[in-house]
Length: 75
Image (cartoon, rainbow, N blue to C red):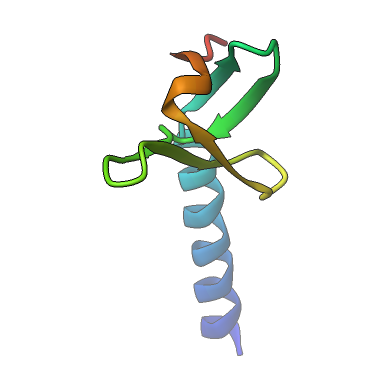
C-alpha cells in the first residue's frame, strides 16, 4: 500500500512540474482578439491555419491571414 502511495505521489509531482514548464503564447488577430495558448500554436500549411488550445482546454483554429502576431508571454 505504501508503495502505491509513493508511486502516485511521484506521478502527480512529475505531472505538475511538466505543466509548470510549458510556455504560454499570446495570439493576436487583426480583428483585435487576443488569446493565450498553452504551447506554441501548430501551423498547418495545407489549410494555412494555426491550431492551439487555451489554458481552459478550448481549441481554436485561426486562418494565417487573420493572424497579427504570436509572441511568448513573459512572466
